[in-house]
Image (cartoon, rainbow, N blue to C red):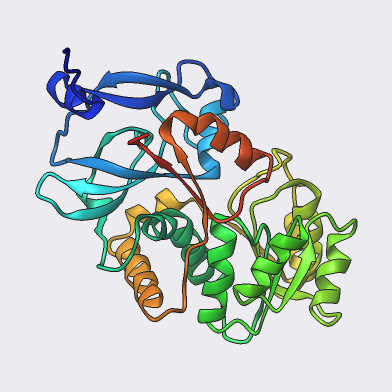
Length: 333
């Protein structure tokens, strides 16, 4: 009888790991399962045995090289992982790439210990998508108690957490937009006061109607195109729109500074990596979110778990808007 060692034993002995490797830019079809050399920590980095890798919409831009930071081939995508360090600590971490793999190296500065009782999916949802929502509300728009907040794509990874955080931070009315009745109901279940069809033919009118006929104070937007244009038009005087993505790949119409002056509105942008440059800011975001989770006031929506080998399908589902909440990959499969 011939005994064949299991795949993980072979990987450890040969310093080979399974990973998703991209050798040409494109859509989900470029995500290919491959065997690669185990990454080697350097300059104080930590090697982490990955239990789950998070999937973000930004990963789809990285695969086609349309992200804010240009990509270089070949590459292993993935900006967030949960797993264990060599000394047994359970952590969640952000990284510039390499997360879609059985092992990854991380910088301790953006690695956070996961409290007992917090599962991998929740930790992954919080570290990038929750922190994105936190930065948008706390820093970009400086949400004030009682203000109205519009959350576009409210059933998605960032949106589902932004609805809850806006409520926790004292928003007066949270208006969610989503593309289906089920997604709109989910947003309402999470605490939104009103849910609007994301395909409304006139988003300005729909948002103002949802706010009792008044302009809205805050909009969190990652859509682009006409939705962004009409959301800007829906702002009240001194209203703020925070732009953090362009899911439909259609740029909004440029806004003239004179128009901002005329309506006393503000448009801001936010890219999470900039938060890493401010000492202690990510630690503050993570600590407050973990505290809200412990208090039962913040929960991640588990949107689906895919085998590492089916990363392509995960990207296809995300781009087709067939998903809600947080998507993760299981590197053991």
